Length: 286
Image (cartoon, rainbow, N blue to C red):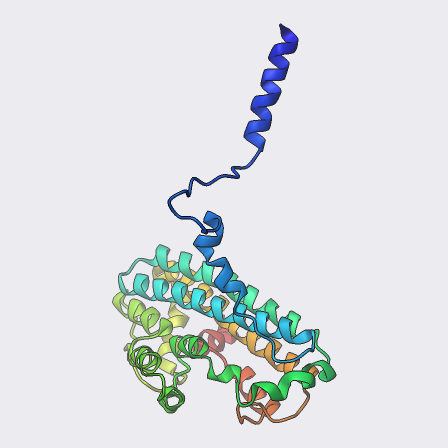
């Protein structure tokens, strides 16, 4: 009797440990697993189409595609944060910014895969993508606009893509992440005039003075986590730019960029630009 009970328990245990292998899809013959359907697996794995026999090209394509997906995810989180700031929901904004920084961390580390390529490996297929350049990524440009690095002239790249151009133009006109943070500071009683501009954010003593009060006056101490969360974002933007610079320097040296840029010189200038500059400037005084 005891033996029978042990066998019964073992059968039940095995049943619990065995994953479901049948999905009840008699009405939908030819369909894959629920997982494959949910993440659109066949389409996803069909998107990589190397143009050369160089093994490193597949790594280049997949890493670039992963970056594009992460750009979309980061835009999603920053949009939530921006909306939460507009609604004076600071906890929700901070939560979205924290999630976004994890996405940024993955993006920064993604450069490590591309940095494994030698110049010889990269040159084996570089000419095959012609004028294609990451600079042309509309998803990346959305992020640049959202952090205040706006440039209306760049919309010209998308004249042949009306929907994409319209989306970028809307982001260009809309308050960015920093704009919404400054508007919240103004609503909390700090002397800062929130402005929405289609141009790049320029350092402002008025904005610096507002943040200085956040970090030095107890009345506004509750806003310090917002300042720190924005600095987390800004620091990771700088890390991204620095890793981009070092990876390009390692894999292709000082050659001109495929999209027509000056290559390393352009990347150096970008890496030296602070995002949310007032938050950096006041550190000297704290």
